[in-house]
Image 1 (cartoon, rainbow, N blue to C red):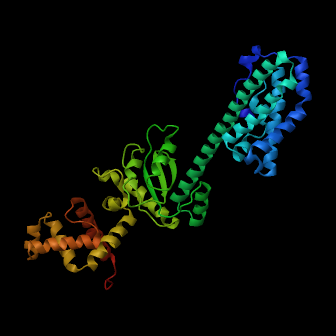
Image 2: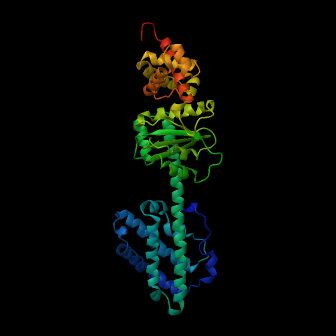
Image 3: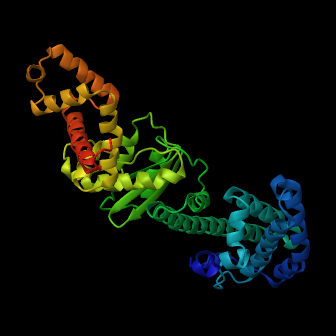
Length: 407
């Protein structure tokens, strides 16, 4: 940020009429500039321990700020109505470096020391009848310098915020493109991520109206669900990358409140960056397929949308149904597959299934519980039964596509 970016009104326009300087006082001020600057630097070394701990080049930069402040005060006191900006006159080329080196609190301490040095020397710089006006001028000037410093930090924060948003957009884009883990790790480090395990992607639609604090509010809410977060808005889509996710919690509900109307889909939690692109693909595929399940919870897990994703042609969902549902079902025994198929075809009737298989209803109930143990999906739940039926279809089609003689 350059001083020219700031265009506040001249700091002394409203008070120019109240300040009166005399040639004698001005001459003393100018003659004492060197000693005042020396005293200011000495006071910084003595009263501010953090100043002494800075690197030499940092102390030099801050010392120049103090010297510029005193010199600019003399010019300002001579002609308060002159269009000389405090931001330019005091800080010069230092604002960006200043905000990186010290906090706003420390900058105000520096200003307090600079003003205090001048105020203590007022009796030596002005005759008794001019000391009160000079002291008032010092106080007024210190106010303007403090406001200028606050503006420096505010504008620096705005620039950092805009730059962070661009970095986060690049990270989101890298994840969606499936960039190599090493490159992605470097990008995440640039946005301050420390935890790069237990990751997932949450997608939905952005709100119709995005306020200036929207990203900060969303990131603050994500702290309850994860240790790290990156927010990206791509068109009408809102994409949230989470790291250090506690998958045992159900606090994604709080995040869904920040999304716009429509489904919110949570991709599977993955252990490393290598699998994060897969979580993003699953979440985006789930977002596209979610309208086929109007009663879906909000948010909904991408894995809970396997049937809809499979109907939409998502090969990863089809593979998941086969490998994670159908194959474990076959491995648990042929009787379970037969029972499930009959149970689904009989409209979820235990009695009709038992008659069709020539077994007792309790046997059917026992086998259905074993299906839950083998697959994680409960045939007694209508929604889970739909997943199981989709897995049967996908698995049988997969078996039919195998060359004969291959099991």
